[in-house]
Image (tube, rainbow, N blue to C red; front, side, top):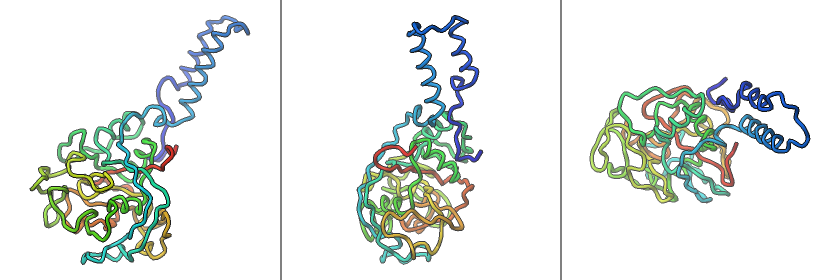
Length: 304
């Protein structure tokens, strides 16, 4: 079983033993047509057993409040902006992208507490502990792409596409290097030292490593830490030439490529790495202490 897959239910109430105990409720008494009360109870037991077995546990038991933000439909220019002198080849060409409908995105990166609920609610292994201390409201780190995708599925969601992520990170503003601004400030971003690679503090940034989510102001869409704190996994593959052929409407991302992708920069990175157009290649199974996740979902209900 891959790490993306789930056991629909691993609680005792879903086990064959529990099914036998349900049948034993009769204690050998013949079931008569007039035993309507028993028939009703038995029907309820059967229905509950089928329901819990047939549907993912996330659909029934997941209780976390992910603070979904509705990202409106719209058009933006994806890729490196004209004012940016640090553009890499895979950040271009810049091209117009249109989203015909809105979508939801978690207001903040998934937290240590939310991910702990996920691992407790499923058979998924918890990530290794980072080399620094974190509270429950810090972004969970050391996630592989598979871990991130599994978490989002449990949350009734999915990973955002690259285009969704960048559109949301820009927050409705155009032509700016760092999403909503042209310059970085530690008053609104948690990022690293000016030279690679170490955490740093200053201004409103009091955290050498990860900061609690929502410690800094949101962008105009109401999304927090789209720049800095931790890199975020997105769906799709890195193909350096994808922007040449990418659809202009709701682009899904490359179906094949040489690497998975993280976006947004982190507490460990110098300013150039936090540019909104940066597409960082990373192994699907890789885990580091500055990569986390933020989930997306389609409007109109959970994709189950």
